[in-house]
Image (cartoon, rainbow, N blue to C red; front, side, top):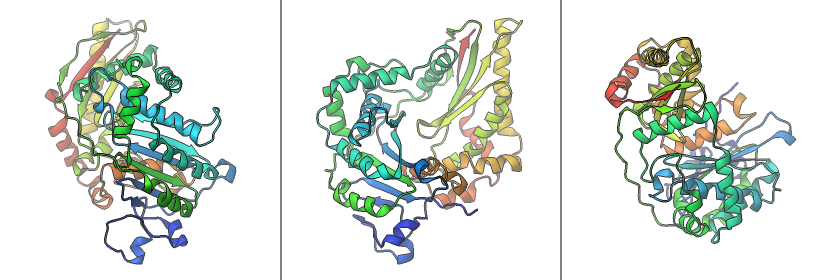
Length: 433
């Protein structure tokens, strides 16, 4: 089966005879023009169009739409913690209403990270035009409805977990606060009730505009009417002012004060590090380090978290402290050793051919080094949409990254260890049983 080249292949537009719009790039030979995926508009917006075939029956097919907003929690000031997430949730709720779907329709998903926010929608091909029009309408919104905003507050809080999972989230947030602190304060202490509809409206008017938004549309659809819609609607939206990049606050590695569990006789040890940004050659060993960590931890129910959307430069690993006849201190020590052993395995043990192949169809795709295979994208286009957007957000050079991925893997992991995974760069936290 032939793999689909996300950054190079766009067959459907070649059949329409359309050409790129509002691009300042020099004229391209016809063969290159047929391969264009990203369309820059004069107002600063970028739209990625990647039509893909589908193996599914027409009634089951979906198109994935990602609206990537270059605004994250690091834009929230003191007193307005959670503002960006709440604003994105409000935009997602508008998609549902403005696209003409009923309240029971499939809602858009919000991925609210520290440095960017994604709104992800999956629609039937027949609904694509209405969904694009709904996105256009969100840019024209001036008034924010307080009733709908309250529903968005409630929806965000409904996602908060309790029990063992909630404790694990709480511990991870504390580690994140040390590795990547926010100006608004500690994560998990949102001030949603203090953020009025007027504040959300003015925030969106200032920050949500073509200069801060990219849109990727991937799946089984005809691009010709979408390109026409770009000319008529998306390109006509007024460009906004360039945003001021928030300052990067200094990390504070070290051992955190222990926190108590809310679940009797269960605890956890976790640690985390800052790692290279995706799209760089220095980030490539993450494609091996992360799956090796996951393999080493899974036997004892441990986990490894690395998310290029939410926290692209943070890796956190966690090991549960389960009930046992031994003392709490002995159990904590055992969990520490389990984490230390997993890290040692991930960094120091040779990379097997099996793991290298596994990485090429997983973490290496997220790092821009490999492509989503068509057996996947012809059933679910979202992984291809995710990879397409990540490549644009992080300016990934696929050919360069692919050539270096896995080459001298042990040396790459050694450099990752020396530059980022040292004791004085580690944040460790304990959820005491």
